[in-house]
Length: 139
Image (cartoon, rainbow, N blue to C red; front, side, top):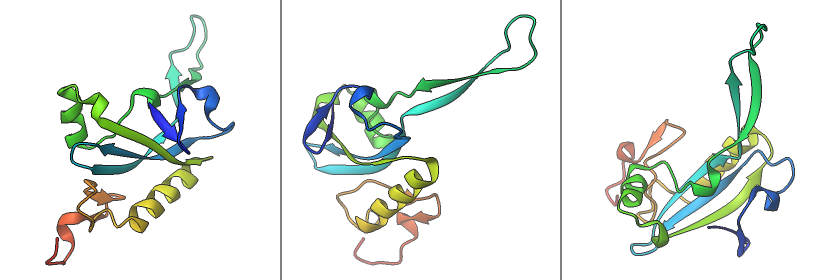
């Protein structure tokens, strides 16, 4: 279950109209480890052309956002152990286009100091800034 402003989100109809995606935080409750990320709500899927036609078809399909917990390997391994009920999933903010979504994710990652804060398991920001590369003896 997703939470947004302390309300349970159970379906796409509860999402603001024209939203492209959202920034989320998954918290593993037993250890209070957190993961910040972004998730798109819809995918553009290309299908083969219909018989007798040449042009490929494009359809918009809802993503797997309802069952999504995060992309980090630690989260994936916990889910394999069936720890779904040990997670709290929160939607922090909605974005209305791809660029806005990336901006918000970067903003949240830097503002929460995810690379320096031990609470967060995020390893990198934008694939450019890595926890292992920080020159800080306290980490």
